[in-house]
Image 1 (cartoon, rainbow, N blue to C red):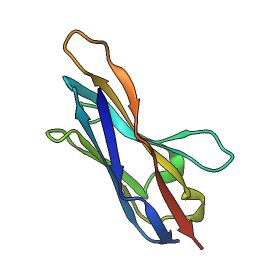
Image 2: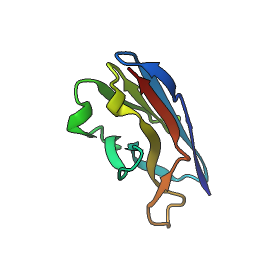
Image 3: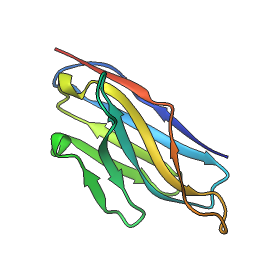
Image 4: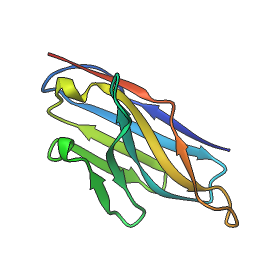
Length: 121
């Protein structure tokens, strides 16, 4: 089994910064794309930023220039540096990883439990 452990959420004032981290552990052969999604109250879950094994990024237009996604490939960890936070960034942020637990197993999507980010005015 694969676990994703997130940390770093909390309450911050508008204009402030937070850094989220997520480490994949357990039965891992290889970790592919890792990244972050978020879900605000009453809204659907949406992509925030992802980073592939080769280093390609996919970042939502709403956070471009403010959020940065990075990885520690050796530690199977993904980070989300969030700067210039706005109240509309308030959401539960979910870590996402595509993991092959064995060389013979197909890649599977895993999700973290979510960490709440609240941006106050």
